Amino acid sequence: MDQKSIIAASSAHLRSGHHHEKLLADKGLFPIGQSIGFLNGSAEVQVKFEDPKGRLILAGDAKIEQIKDTYCLRLPKEKFESTVQSLRSSDYVFVVFEGSPDRATIILCFYQGAGATFETLERENPALRLTTCDLPPTAVTVVDVPSVRNALYALLAKNQPNLFSLSARRFLSTPHILTHLFAHVMSLASNDNAGYISTLRIIADELRSLLKSRIKKIEKNHNKLWSTFYGEKVSFLDGGVSRIVGLPGTEPIGIRVGIYAVTPGERDLEKREAWNLRSYVIGDVINDRTMIVDQNYRTDAKRLQEAARYILEPLCALLYADSIEGQSARLLLLHGPLQNPFVIYDEQDPSYIPGVSKDFLASVGISEDSVRAEVAEIPKDAGGRLLWNGCIPIYLYIMKRLWRAKIPIAGVVERASSTSFARTVIDSLVQEGTIPLSTGKKLQARILRYEIGDELLFGCILEEGEYLLPLELRKNYVRRGHDRWKPVIEQFPNPVATMVKCSATNFPYRVEMPSAPGPIELENEMSLLYHMSLLLPNYAFPVGIDIADKYVRIPDWLSKGISERLTAGILKKILETGDKRMLMQVRRLLALSPRDFFFRPRA
Image (tube, rainbow, N blue to C red; front, top):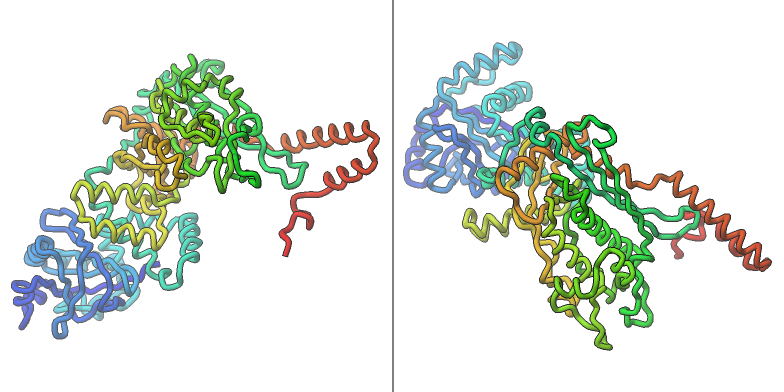
């Protein structure tokens, strides 16, 4: 974790001296003494302090300079003036260094009448013997006794929690977060390991300061929340896949999409909860291979499964929203993104995904005319046939319809490990002129270099019960698609997204919506998500989605039972033919398991 060191200085001493006045007045340098703790002289630092009015000041572009035998901080003019004002109105300054030798945070704690601080420290820890450490300082004291340093640090953090980012510290110290953190650090270059946590905290501090006006706090009040949604149906959707476990090497072939709905306050158990389940076979949904023109192609089985699930889940959400049952819902929550990146699921290299079955589309009320009415510039194949039932136009059709759904819909992403939202936030700060383009590029470069995912970064930025005002989040980039599909990809609507942190010791999650609701409805929806995430201990995720997830998940015992019946049926058919050679081959195949040597990679 971060290294720490503390310097205690008399403000009168820093204001005096043979060159200090000149430094303060002419060069804009703030002296901090003859030591900078564990830091390198060229270390990249950010400085945090509170001005005389108690406002948090953050200088992310500070530098360390040495004049004669004194180390000084060079700060931007307006922030330097605030430090001078704070210095003049204080008796003591504590300079706290946190981080790594190359990248750290310097916290300036200005205290007026700090004698009480030292009395408190000595009263709570009589064995410290502060006078032997030159505390209170007569000039500048490097606090290098570990017990004294730790006790002083704890007291300073208790008195000025905003300066010490205690929420982020608690989040990063949680065992399961710490395990994730160290596992991630091991995947980075060795030179980046030491500075990872320091960089993470510096970026989090800087972004929290910049996003202060966009961060909203949710009131923790279960009675108020549930009275707001009393008698209002809330629905949850999730999907699951299955395969025949008795046939080794087979890919998932079935998809189930389940919807669980609950009405808070309803006492009649028959009316309180409702269940809806749709089952599909992938081969019945995506099977039009006539649009694949390459002769020697092989469909990517994983991409085929993804395409089917990505299409079926929002399609079921659309069908539910259009139904009589769905129209009575106050909100429908999907487990996962509201929109997925979908540019790779076409009939060309390398995925070779077939088109969606026209018979299946007809069964759910989707025709060529309806698709063409929503999607423009659909390409044609070499024979002039319009590829209207390709996966991309069908997915786009569903997205456009979903954007006009009759009920509010949102996608809840449990593990937001990508950096997409952080990059969107930084871009928005640049566009509105809050930070210059150079600062935005610098922040994004650090995030990419250290692979700091959204869940970890915003876990440090946000405190419990906080969320960000939604921002538009682009999912499907035209440049990533094949040329003939680019005009279609360009038509994808962009969702808006936010991050919500429901527990001080758990990852936040991302929420995606077709558009940002009004302030009151947004507050109600975020409050609902927050309070639902508190219903189970140590879960910090909407409990209704967990119920839907368990509902659609196909248990092993069920897959095994289906496999046994299928195996028996195959053997029965072979026995009826009387072909001994075929019987022998099938028996050998069924005797294998997915972990057999037969299925291991060849050298």
